[in-house]
Image (cartoon, rainbow, N blue to C red):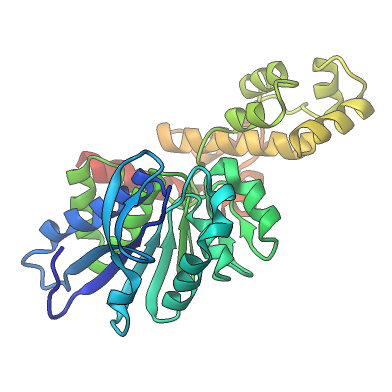
Length: 335
């Protein structure tokens, strides 16, 4: 993207061992958007990859990319700063102090600042996420909250917008984030055309889960309750799934089961059951034409009102709003 007299300046931050796809996925979206903006009287993008000193920067995959120095853009109005993550962010963050400092300073004069995957660690280190909700890769959520207790991680979100700060989940969620940024700039029609061009969903809602509840449970409990969770996923319609019933299935006393389950999974059995039911209902809303009352009964909520209250608590959306958003996503890529 070449400089133009009037353009939205997008700066993609690079640093040693940054994730290549974290960086280039969002870049590709903005680059491809240019073709769909032509003839629509929209302000074009001017994108550059930047780093502390400029020159070649080696990504964690071993690919070397050319960058311009931060100082080259001193005094220029910045529209958007996009910060990638790195698989080894925990080990390299302390050595990125000057880059973090620039991110914090640039956020003060940029219209918006965004991170992809563990790029949220850099935004948090710059103080941009204090008191805010944020997304990151599901596997780094606990560490992000532990290291930066002033923020709150949304473990389900594909991306989160808080004022002028945007954060997204792991790797390819940077595409979802970039599409949302383009939609904000250029409107839905451009973003839809762009999504079709890139052969991606337009758009996964910010509330859509990063991965399944069953996989989450398997990852967290070290296989202690795999059999129980698999059975639970197939029996959510059963209204009698209290602690006693689950404990019996796990061949434990109710008291011991409740204690060990919370210790192994980080959730009470009741809270885990609620998450399983929400995920099952989401799948049905996405993939079936069943009405809300049918879905509520089949997923064990009992009635539509209880399902609606639970959805709002977990997702900030009603079931009807969720179905509408997912329906728009499916229609957008198949129309």
